Length: 265
Image (cartoon, rainbow, N blue to C red; front, top):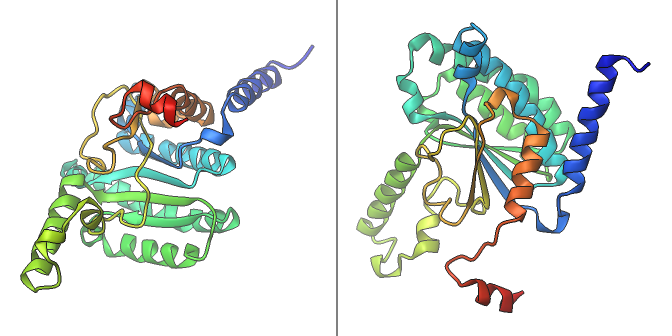
């Protein structure tokens, strides 16, 4: 008789392989963005404090980064901490910053081993010195990696990003470096934190909430949105595969009619 634990593991691997095998490798999203939500509720459901949930959320980050790298997804952006999150209880914010520093320090060797380059978008001036130092070192240590690009959105909000871009455009117009008549969508995009990244094609939000929460508002204009009730600490590769399969079953029209899309294909 096969041990119960081994049987469960075998069944889970079978489910994962079945889902993964259902993915059309020729139609993968180039860029996936994820709002990692539900750490606090996951912890509270277990009678623990919110930091316990954030700690276990790191395991999901590792698993999903690995899953995306295995599929050869080019860009993965994770919404880790918003500018609004600074308003949370001081002990939670302090604990999150300590967790951030420890996680970055511990994960850099794995990123290098897997040829993953780290990027960061957001208002870094708001982070503690220790976090900025670890981030800068991690950015430098992974900058030559040529595999997947892992983008961490830290102390980030889309309204902050857009306002910052508008202010810089105004300064460049005032100084004569930019002709306002030449400002276009591509020019505007050059002023965004994501200027070197393609727009996400798939945005995933966990925990059952149906909102974008000030995340990549300009960049998500034509992204496919996928919402799941799964809380982030429970989100694993099979959940990622389900989201990608759902994405591949959608018709992406970009304002055109279905007939026009069919004629182009």
